[in-house]
Image (tube, rainbow, N blue to C red; front, side, top):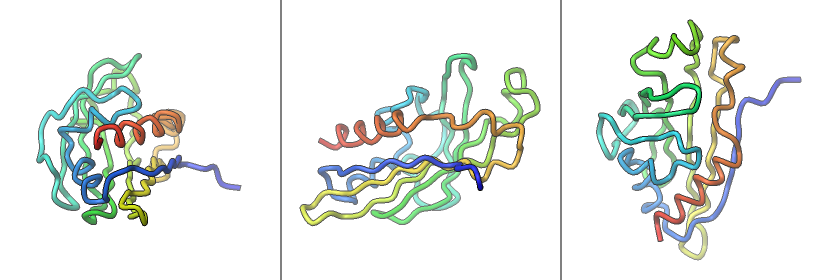
Length: 161
């Protein structure tokens, strides 16, 4: 039996997929959506992102870690339908004083959008750490809870009102 390495939440937002996608594709607005309270703002990179391979750096903060930065590369991008990014510590090794030589890269945050009959959007938010290859780093996961992901979904809906 394999251990589950992803979390998923879904909900409906009263806005069309194109509006939802536009907000998700704009890292400068991600702090509005952060149900985990870790994001502190866009540090560098395009806003909005325009396709797979685009990358942006976010300022972050967590209890027990303090301030740090994450570079996220867009790994899935279909306007109005899907977007996902894979974050990694930036610059690499900059948190070694906290986590040692562990490599926690290999996780993604994804959003899938589906139009509803009433003009809204069914949104499925997935946090997947199945790509983490450093077995020692797996103890660090999940970095967000299902409740925090649900809060992000709520905040997404609120931002689009």
